[in-house]
Length: 424
Image 1 (cartoon, one colour):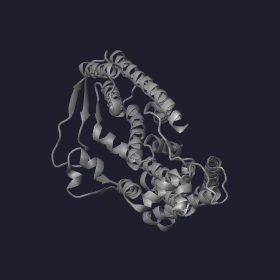
Image 2 (cartoon, helix red, strand yellow):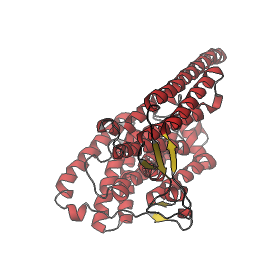
Image 3 (cartoon, rainbow, N blue to C red):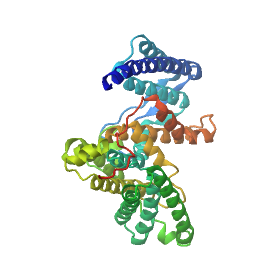
Image 4 (cartoon, rainbow, N blue to C red):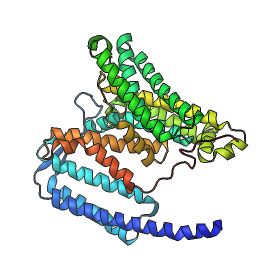
């Protein structure tokens, strides 16, 4: 019976794969034609700066000057060519790589058109992208920790808000950013512990629990902001922001140095956590047990793994990681707390986790895409692009919808994700 079901599923999967390949082929051709007709009529040159004035590199890289019309038409032809190749024979396992290339071509063509007669600092864009990806990556890592063990964490937005508030309050009162960061971590961990108790111990619906915690966080931080932070703005809502820390020698590398090695502590923590969590999940006994619990908790229980303990531990650890991401808003970016300052980025972090296929490196890559979309709308506003500001502010959220809608293909979550476990 199982064999016949699998045999019937294979032709359906193959048909779906062929359909997706055709859709992507026509999409690439359409993107190429759009680039040619929308941006190909512009004239003049665009200048892309490859140095940051505030950071001295060991070698000065000359600016990249691009003639708009020829560059746009070449990029359009490249998209059409990739689309034709996709329709003719497809790219197999490299489909998502080609999709990324087409996306990069479109973005560069758009920037070339938008910067005509002006200049754009590419290093500044890359640096801003990495900074804006920090909370998204940390929130996505929180989701990876939780869902790999079988618990859905929709409360990342609430963990961000509570941690941002705690970081601002404690960091200001103690006049110490590190203590504020610790407070933010603990606040995120506290929400994670509440989520764990409600969903694991009492088996409350995980989605509903996450939504309730988000609403609670929004309400309690708004109330405390009005009653506590507003009257004492100077003493309780003015934490010191972590300053950038330049790594000797590495920060002087052209282009790469200012982006990766002249950042604040949150960027270094993010990269460290991505590496550590990837190794922990896929190279250690701990990770094997977590993945076993997330895929088949009954089988894990039969071999002596304490399923509930693994889930409790991962959800609380995820809360601590999300707490770092929340503290970034007040201690690494803005420098003060405001109502609903996270603006839905916890949900974008969830999208990054899904697009990244529940893998730390994949989540980081997806967060960079969303971070770039966020940074891009600021650059376009500076360039006075004739696009309404409301549409520019929508950019990161529109990108999120498009990506999660299935452009990158169907992602399979852990088999036991969202399913409570009752020990028999």
